Image (tube, rainbow, N blue to C red):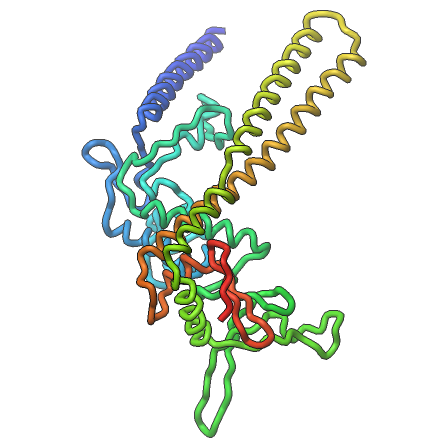
Length: 389
């Protein structure tokens, strides 16, 4: 009996300590003070003021990871690249996990912002940490510490991650052209092929891009896609022509982009509708809570009560589904707004005519390129405009 009492005292003491520690942590979060798991957090160390400060050598690796992704590499190919170059992981290991690369590319702390309390302690005895899905308050602090990645670059990477995800299949690309070249015949994607030939004792090697489904005979024996193969030199040459054509009236182009941004990316009506749905969810939740309380405290007709409560639950379900759908549309519109804003910044910083192919410009402004049967290429830019070259 004495032992049980001691256990009870121990538990209460543990609870009290845990609550005090948690309160202190949440107070620091509310004040915007950021703390990182520095031992396994690449790029930062704890500064003299207690806030994160940049470790230059590690920050160089972080910037490399972001650059490689925007050059077309996948999470896994970046991990292999880092291993080949003997770059240790954040944990100091020789091998890199794909999930670690993905985590670095999606962690907002690298742009100098911090989303605090992503996880929380669910059990003060076991110290079990669980993902915070709304159980406790989160805090988002902007400019909380020095950025390793510029916010615009970080946001561009998030949009590229979303773009690749929406392709419907993984891209094992190592090229900036992968996943952006579309077949005008079947709508499939172009892939890089290596052609080899022999002449005497010499081997000739040529890299081309052609439709991945070019020689498939599905439902159409003897006929594949009629789009031609193309070389990277041709892609670059046509891109320069298309971009320079677009820049003939740069001021008018920027004005059109701003107009499109205001019209296509406006979320005012969505925000109003969301506010109404949140009120509906709040009302229905309160009605259901009162019904449960009433059922627990007094004798009510169970059939009638069940029908009424099920109606509340159905209203809640429908409203929640509408919220999810509207929030998805809102994210899409906000993402499109960021894409157009990035497009505007890029063309503002460029001369009216460019003479050399620039990989960063390609990644910044091109959405996709359709290769037609006659070899013409239609470039769709990220602001929605199309130019055929």
